[in-house]
Length: 400
Image (cartoon, rainbow, N blue to C red; front, side, top):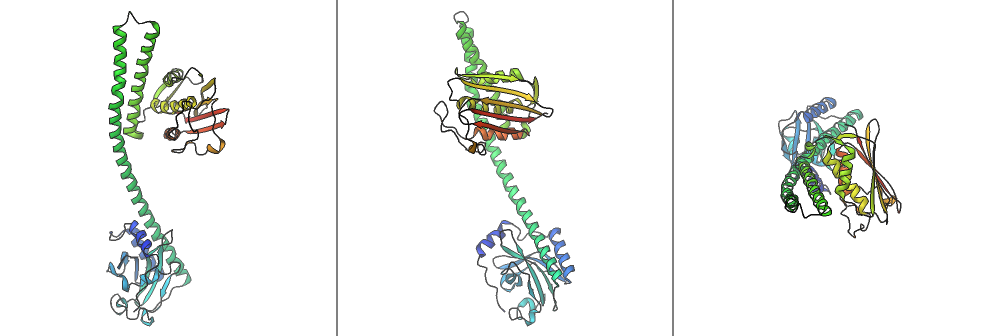
């Protein structure tokens, strides 16, 4: 008897097999159907899905055979995996010097004829075989060999699906862990942000009430604006935290009066004196989630302010519509974005400008966040830009 050589890629082959987490699992009808069909097509009493482990061959499916595994050093399949591209055939093991005294030939199950089609993964690892066995000399026609190979491909397909399910389960578990971390972080942010914002609002109220007679109009208006911005920030933080905690389930559409909404958004962004923001609101009202839309437009307007290098900066906001879509445009006359960067500008951690008008470097997160938020609303975002002339960011959302 000759023991099969160990494949040159044995460590990688074994690691690949382990990824499927299939060894010692229960029988499954998908595999049992294949072995039954292989036995029928090839006219043999036995058919196996055999996987070669460290020191054994283990049968995921065993049609016509009670055993579930045998030692690797006597396995016919251990020879078959050495030539992954070919069906390994032994016409009469009793006449073959490699197997004439093999315990599987001289004893149960009395293997005389063997044909094994290797189970080869997409990256070329032979993990085992789909094999057929007879207790008398036999042969396969070309059509039977093709059928056996096709069925072995089906076994690999089922194994690949199994691995994908395992990978998805791991990803799901990781997402659940991340969501829990986000929830905890959101509660922490809620406390750390809302407390000072509430304090600002309360202090503004206190100063206004205690100094009603002595405050001039400029101071009074300044305090009222401070209180209004603090309130807007609290609403925004609450909405962002809700989305962070509840994810997609937190989508809460409301009817938005667009002229008032955009004006409030511009006030919230506090453009400097050298930036003029105009708006052309052609849609009176829309229905969407105001928190998500606020995050999208605030980011785009904020970028238009930060990356404007003109002495007379201009930002124009347009809200238009078509029969099936709402179109938001934020147009500026700022730095502009090189054409070569358009395809990557929405990627995570992608930074184009070295610094903004305030001398700060961007994080490369904002536009990626905008893109994800837009896609969560089943929309898309487009960019038109010329260096030195300015940029147009266009957000297109479907009507509710």
